[in-house]
Amino acid sequence: MCQLTVYLDDEKIMNDVMLVEPTPEGVRLVKMFETPRVIPATIRQIDLMKNKLILEKIEEEVKK
Image (cartoon, rainbow, N blue to C red):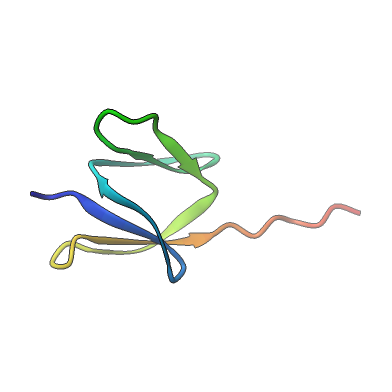
């Protein structure tokens, strides 16, 4: 199968992800039979040989 394991920096956050979609809020991750999640992150790396997606947290700007 071609599902991805998703990591946020070095922490595993989801298994068996079937759809990855960039959005203005971050990255939308979809698993079969579950509610999609939007993670406030950007894609750092996709490794198709290892079925691995690595996300990087979006740093929030400090407002003055």
